[in-house]
Image 1 (cartoon, rainbow, N blue to C red):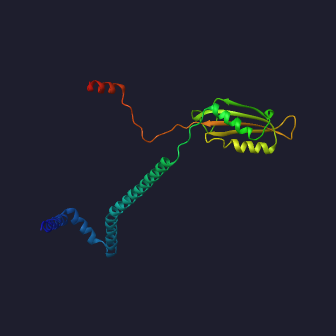
Image 2: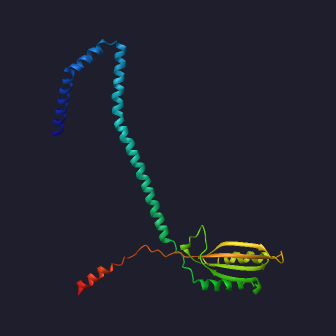
Image 3: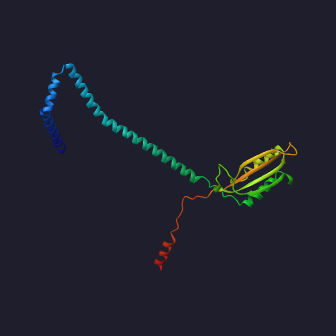
Length: 226
């Protein structure tokens, strides 16, 4: 019943408004000018008015439709981004942690033992030198534990290939950064090789961390307990 009353009130007010507009001098003047126009121009004017009314009537729902489409597109892009973030987070949590590098002295000793497996004579192993961090465009210095330089002399081609292929997979944290191979000065049939290794240091990051309360808070808590 309330809806019917509101509808009747609205229709009555609309009729009153229409009658007031028709009785206004401006409307009467426009109506006289319209009546004086030829029938062809009257049809054109009615068509233009209908087009204008239709344009405004169509523009409001069209604007709402475009806004809803934009909101839907933004929602889908954010949903896909959240899914990708969750997938990457899951894969990162399931991935094995990067191992910690052993001490540099142990790496040098293990590399000397690995070179002995190639049955090289002492004259061929000039030295394995532990050095400071090296300049590298791929590995920053704050992620380097140290560096090693392996200097070998008078090797044949097979020995160079075997040594390089074995040492570059020596340890997950030991990476071959540079390789220099030159002909031996005294005998061009042999080769001299210099291998530069970088020991990578990746800090262990845990997802769950507990913050230790400040010292002042601990003192206050201890005083309260006493």
